[in-house]
Length: 89
Image 1: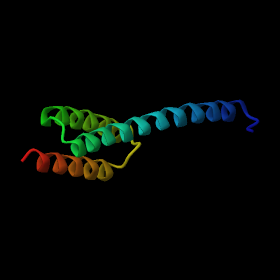
Image 2: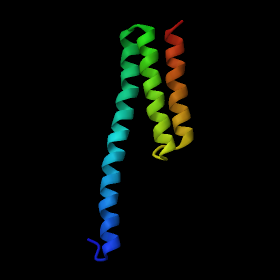
Image 3: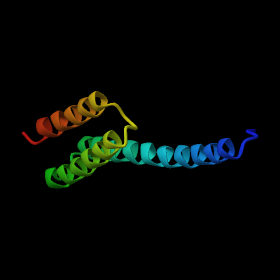
């Protein structure tokens, strides 16, 4: 454990950030999985597009907060959009 007051504060902040980041990453994984599962089930395309929109928004927020690299977000969004486009045909 840190001895200096500022180091103790930094340790507390690190714990809070870690918990927030874990929650955000979990939410992103859940949103992406919802899209993939609804594609497998063959649900209504309008519903799938709404789920895709939500997943894209969460990925964009993660990119803006620098939790995920911009190229990683672009790759994931592109992959999901491609799968949704194929299903809508």
